[in-house]
Image (cartoon, rainbow, N blue to C red; front, side, top):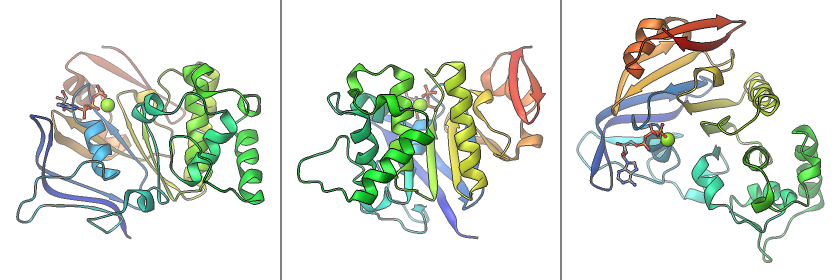
Length: 260
Ligand SMILES: Nc1ncnc2c1ncn2[C@@H]1O[C@H](COP(=O)(O)OP(=O)(O)OP(=O)(O)O)[C@@H](O)[C@H]1O
Ligand SMILES: [Mg+2]
């Protein structure tokens, strides 16, 4: 099986902060994974390694390979990795209407530009994505005038329009109401069943759909545990990770947490 990401002995800085030191992690293709950790544990930093927005300090025996390669043209990589993050949401251009947000996925751009050309098939596909996500009413609404959840759903559409094999999600349901959360989770489940690999980065246990079977616990830049979800997720491990008593409840393959 080929790997989506292979991180070996990586040291990574954000500004002056050393986030990772001697960090190792592998994610195989087809092995949808949830990466769980408290605020500041390094989740978004890890995601930036995946999207080649950050590189590790150059050192012997140290590398980060994304889809088997250490160097990527960022635009080319984005055809293989659909990424949705709150950074993207805050940087996205406000005057772009919903339909064009979806279309911008073809160029991985944060808006559409006059020089970009779209084929009739691409327009058709954008329309289909709007329908599938139940957001046709957003097609003419500008990004700046959408609610947080509406923006989030448009960005999901943007990531899906290209049918990337892999999807990287950073706290995807934050800001979504219950219906939108459930729709979002159903979409993610469907994508995994269709054979996509999803890497979900979160501190919300309820965001992990049953189809994600592997969990990595991250704490202060270190992998604390990684393995099968049923083995990794338990009261003790989560209480330790989040430094507060936690009681985990399992319901139909989903999890919820309560104060311990
Ligand atoms: N631009 C930056 N400059 C300096 N330090 C940073 C920067 N961005 C993040 N950090 C630091 O890097 C560490 C990891 O941050 P990161 O954003 O990866 O955490 P996270 O797990 O995504 O947290 P959250 O759950 O709050 O999103 C933190 O200690 C943070 O303070
Ligand atoms: Mg983060």
